[in-house]
Amino acid sequence: MPGHDRARCHRHRRRERCRQRDLGPRSPDRDGGAPERPGPAHADDACVDHFEGLEAQLGYLAVDALMEAVEQWLQGQLTEADQLFRTGTSEWMCLLRSAPLTELADWLEHLVTAGNRHLFQSSRHETHVGIKAGAYALADHDRYSTALTILVPGVRGLPTARGQFSQVFGERADAAAALHVLEQRARHLQASLDNDAIHLVFQPITSLQGETTHPHDVLACLLDPNGVEQSAHWFIEAARQFQLVTALDRWVTGRVLTLQHKRENTHTPPLVIKLGEQTVRDAEAFLSWLAPQLARHPLAPGKIIFSLRESEIEKHIRKAIVLSRGLRALGVDLLIEHFGLSVHALKLLDHLPVQYVKLAPSFTHKAESGDRLDRLKEVIEAVHQRNVKSIVSHVENAQTMARLWQLGVNFVQGYGVQEPETVLM
Image 1 (tube, helix red, strand yellow):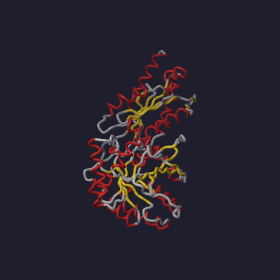
Image 2 (cartoon, rainbow, N blue to C red; image 1 turned 90 degrees about the vertical axis):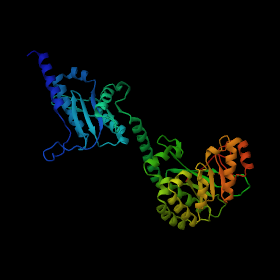
Image 3 (cartoon, helix red, strand yellow; image 1 turned 30 degrees about the vertical axis):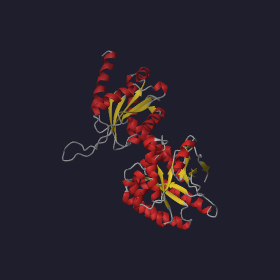
Image 4 (cartoon, rainbow, N blue to C red; image 1 turned 135 degrees about the vertical axis):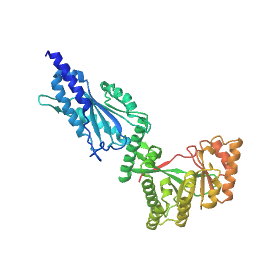
């Protein structure tokens, strides 16, 4: 048989073998039926970069033996929950169940990095090969056939010359990338909590009515992995998504209690600590934790103010009542922030022992005249009738401050009043 005919025959047998092989682990048959399969998985495609050049260099027999080694290595990167199929001479498909959506990008990057560093060996050759891979993050309505029409050409077309060897595809790719970012930030936040690497920033709340006591908002900041200082906006969504709000609230509360206790004999201002929705839901647990903390760090009444968001109070009204009354019994004041957006906002003041409200930022925007000013005046008067002090935030200029003074607002806050002060702890 001429050489090119033998090569054609060999390639034909190799393609047939690839179509017939399912390299993934199978579950035992039940009642002689089909193997039991887990639920939907992410589709993963991996192939050898510049395979034609490798085949021309080594020959088709040698390169086929080398692909067997690549195949075995790929199988070793998977778990028993995953299934690997050889779909071509130098290409494999995997049903990936072991990597959650948030870890897909990391999983792929690890796969191609490790693969491109690995020295693959056959009986006669050893060499490095370029591996590129992609995953299709399947949505509920996706079909595997649809995923493959996007995934396979997408992986084959990856611009490896520019250093890109992996990518997540599909409608959920952006969600996967966003979740990946949040997970990274959550890990960084957890490490910062564990290592006490968070510092506090205090933003003054200035009196317009001559009061001598000026509360300060407590803001948590940290350094990101690049050494850049980030405010809570950078990590708070990650804290919510990965259940770190309670730990963050307690960390900040503990530091503030220590700080206020050390300065008990000085004229320190009350400090406002924001509590998240997770803490509101776990009202009893937070109160049980807080009581011994205050026993160890006794403070004069009113030195600590806890702030709850209006929308979260309404969402968990019974828990919010338990929390607010428990805090009041411990000598702690309560503030409702983003106040006034709900039609039931004023009714909250009849059920919760509130000392302060901070109006929603929308009240400040274009509040110099018109219906918005009338609404602001109405809310402030109703708040004061209930012996609750009013705070208006996001004040950026003297004109707005003067108008708020005329309305009788107790306190104002904003970069137009005074910027935050950093305190390292």
